[in-house]
Image (cartoon, rainbow, N blue to C red; front, top):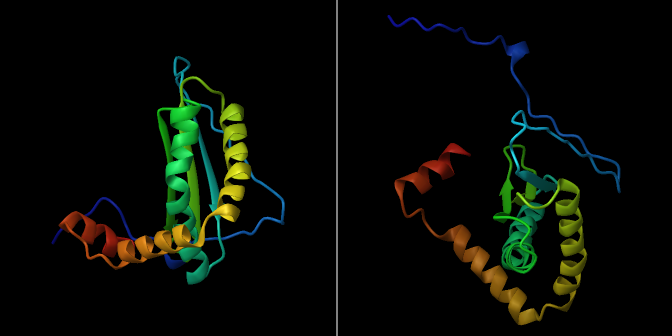
Length: 164
């Protein structure tokens, strides 16, 4: 018999996934101050959640694939705001889609990073509106191919099944 230094939680103490919908036009900001006073880095992670539907999640994945290169090009290459600049999209266990825009910088404040992200979003909206249909079709086809591509490594397959 093995003895563990812990016990199972009672059913009433288990953490549940909770979702809350903010009123339209309402944002929520969480600011965390680091404990190291010598730390010069700032980071901003803007998160946009979608509806709890397969269509919304797929549109989020498609938006991220279209946005990835221009976001990096504008904020990292052109404006040189941070050394980590990336987009992320995923489906959470709750079924909600999530788009994340991440920047880490040692030269810009969080407010400056947020202003840059908001500016990019406004400009990018026009990029989407003006996108030729052929380009949009290519992005969709690439996303379908990516989703249907079998896992190439054991690590990829483990990640896929672990999150299911």
